[in-house]
Image 1 (spheres, one colour):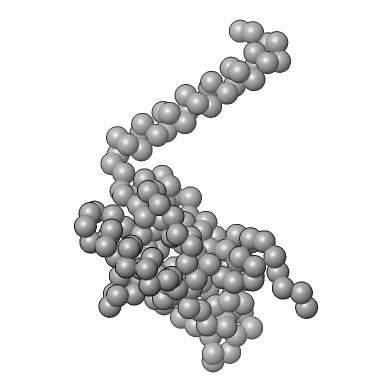
Image 2 (cartoon, rainbow, N blue to C red; image 1 turned 120 degrees about the horizontal axis):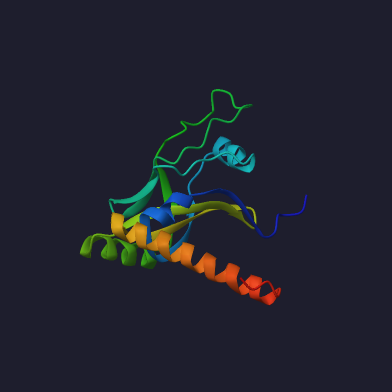
Length: 159
């Protein structure tokens, strides 16, 4: 059977970009069991309330929900277990330094398969205040209105 190519997104965390200002993104592998991979391949996962944290010089993903595999037996996994993130030592040390020096956090943005390997995209993020969120919404609405006006003008429908 030929190996998969490309990128197949399993789950994305849309709320993360609303609640956090993403400063930088990293691609990390995950240490998974067989039933977790099968459940992910079926397209079942949730990143709601998930976060990454440093412990003993390693990075771990907490609260990511991968439901039990339907055909799994006694070998099935626990849905919300802590999973180790697989990054190069230099990246881990750099991330841990950034997390300790300022009020930043690691938020998972997407879970996907890249050339057959399960990956998670984590973002180095800073929490937004309520007024920042309102400003972003107002800016998005203004940009959308500008695009509508440009589109109407291009079609010759002047107001």
